[in-house]
Length: 175
Image: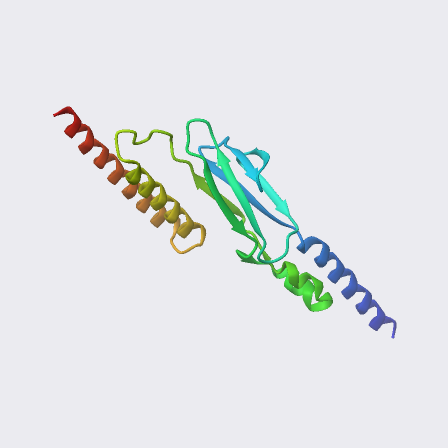
C-alpha cells in the first residue's frame, strides 16, 4: 500500500514540475548585422541577439520589428506553433491544462537586414523583389524546408544576380 502512494506522490510531483517548466517558451532573435533594435508588439525590448520568452498559449502570434541605422526596417511575426513541446504533452496527460502549451517557438529566428540605398540606382520594384526573395528564402530555411547549405547557396545566387544587375545598370548610366 505504501509503495502505491509513493508512486502517486512521485507522479504528481513530476506532473507539477513538467506543468510549470513547460508553460514558457524561449526563442533567440538574431539579425545580420547584430546590434539591431528589437520591438515586440510595438514596444522596445532590447537589441539583437535578444532572448524572447513568454507563456502564451498554442497559436499565439507575436509581432516583431527590427531596426538598425543604415538598414531597412524589418517587420514580421512568429507564432507559438513551430515546435512540439514533449514536456507539456507528457504533463498534459496527467493534468490536461498544459495541452494549451504543447507547442513552442523554434530555438532561434535569424533575420537578414537589407542596407538602405543598396540599389539606389535601380528601380524600387527590383529592390523590393530582391528583399522579398531573401525573406522568402530565410523563411524556407527557418521552416526547415531547405538546409543551411541550400540557404546559403541560394542567398549567394540572389545577391550575385543583384550585383550583376546593378553593374549592368551602372554601365548603361556611364554610356
